[in-house]
Image (cartoon, rainbow, N blue to C red):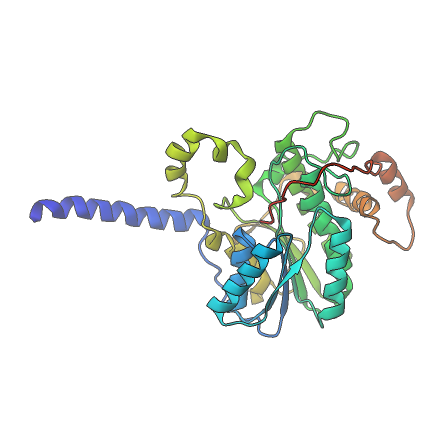
Length: 353
């Protein structure tokens, strides 16, 4: 038996070090133990991946959870699962398609009418490196879902958030924002060759710029807004990337990456932290890399770009404004609304972080 002791000890040590390494690399768990009983949380893309785990974690802390998803069959199933596991009966499924302005407005109208307050809005849903798809309203899918959809939803819920202050908005971006560039002459990828990677990076940069501009506009309102990179997480979001499509990657590289890539439960920790941490009360306009505040890429600090993106986005989604400034007129001319498309039924949009 003695001859087995050393090999077993070595294996145990390696596994233990691997667990510790993964915990260190992934950033660990949310340090806050704060409860949110009585607070209402709206989470988009909550039927799978980060969104589902974020909903589960916040339901454990006593929140009233509104899960906004496109696929209602999966959303209802996820809500039932979370209710059963957390014994929190206040977990509800609601329909929203972030690739449809009409659907976003209907969802926001229902929330505004049915909910007494909205304390936390987590803009979690997203699509990554999909083919050159268009939204129902003719926008490039990644820019339309990842940025424009959440831009419109947040603005439509702002009055409810303000009346519920202190309240929080949390936007999910990505480290990929550092490679993003806002092409205001062709945000919709209609004049240049489509690059699915660059389109994704542009949408993630837009998330950070939107956060910073919104934080400025909400000063003194009691509503804070922050943005985060959750880390690299094993979810369905990367279904269109080469790593998921290559047999070599799946069989050879995935076992190695699994030691470093987060589980959805681990990946949800930064969202939970920004949602509940008492020490973040009043903190706004910040970028978090997992659980640590960091400075985003230089392009994400461009205040003129942030303001221009806001003006262009408002024009594209038809957001009502009291008046249009000359700067807004210039922005609209730089990026005219795309032509209305009437394609065959759209392929499914992954509702995930």
